[in-house]
Length: 188
Image (cartoon, rainbow, N blue to C red; front, side):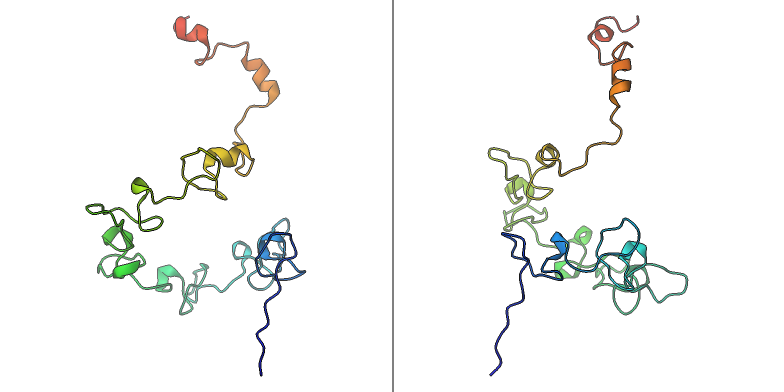
């Protein structure tokens, strides 16, 4: 009599994902990584991630895009079912049409035609999931946090355009459009 074997779980505490290799899930470093220098993405084929040439490629000569189905990329007919609107190249959602032509699940509130986001409701009717920070009413965007709280927890990289401290100290001596004196005397 065959027994059902439970797949091994990731060895990281509180992680319930399936282990891929070295007793780790993909998120915690399991699986084969891309052999391209400094790349930590998961290898798809030939030891490379999709960005570095891994994965199946479109069979159409001269096309290097990733194959979706039938050996060809989305542009050459691969992928899922197309929108039933004859002039539309987009993929169909529920109902056989793309979102722009009426496909996809709609909000369940009478008279609302917006797309359903969560539990049958659109964002305007409370369908979006909220930030996990207490009393924050913004919508989740990154790891259960809104963008503002993700930045505070350094999940989102900060702008690379920030001034260095040297440039900032020099800027204090010049008149800025943001300084009080400029606002009081704009033409000086």
